[in-house]
Image (cartoon, rainbow, N blue to C red; front, side):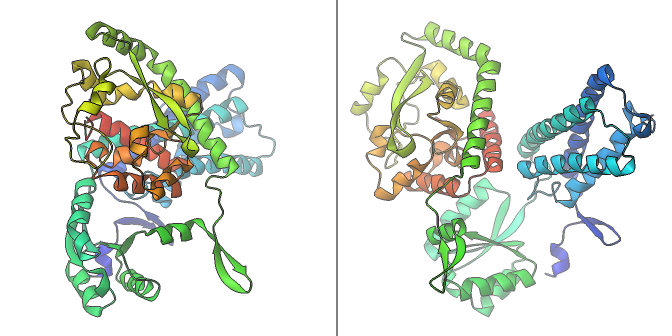
Length: 469
């Protein structure tokens, strides 16, 4: 396989390179971005006409109901998005980076406007609504389009993938990768022989476009494999060990004349925490406001279909091991929690007590659980600061009592309504160790963009019923 076969189709303008996957998915995202910008500008122009019309120096005519200035602006925006690979599959979910790009272009337009004509006073009643509206609508429309495209498998590519891992892990990793991604495993190799020339030749013969590796020996072997694959134009994905995750969090420093990696005890900086908390407050507040009719309808339906209150609360373990009351809509018959001690764990898991076809669940409760609507009252927990929209799922005291010492690391952050556990199989995960490993991965790689991706994936899973009971 030549390196040319691995290159994406792209568009070139002289020396300027725009990476772009030409397919229905990328074209749909491009059309969505253009629509979002058009709506934002149309609203902003209507507001602006009330206060100050567009200056004559910036009014170059109108096309399809929008000024020529908009089409110039939109063209620059789409080119910038293409230049940063936002229409390529691996970068289309970089929502925070996309918002930053929108901001940068709007701010840059002010500089261009000043040098174009310093006497031009750009109407603030146009600029601010268009700026804020563009950020909001571009992200929202992208979230919706990606949700639809993923479900329709539009533009989805089957990626030939070679797996390097300890032999006992091959079948399990193949099951996980092929069931959760668009990858197809085309070959295997044990980690111990990854440095041998024959291994690279087997990878090339398999025509794999990427290699996923776990358990590689340190330093020379890992770096040697990376350079070989890089020269062949093949992507390398490493499944990180705990040591690698710690290295990522640290910063390189010279200490006592020796190179070291300093790992600070603080997980989130002050600004990061404030940003996440602001998103939680705004998201939970808007959610309760918009969903209040649905919340009232569910509460009435529960009261009418089975005796007992509409809500259920339970002690859960949260930040730093503190216990709080987590609220849900009641999905079981009254006093069902007391009947739990008389029932066996029939789902075969070592912990995380759940039973398929649990007889204690009401008919309405089955629907609420399948759609996760029973979790909506936890928006109140979010407003109270006991939970976040995204984070490790808070577990009951009975499950936490079964923890190994390292499991408690998940309590270093505020628990969430949804998280990696929910989008990685929910009730179908193999056990507590896998749940905690996902939680620790989330903690180490947290970002606002990751939270947005997890919220989107949660919506998709809820709508199409995967793994909840």
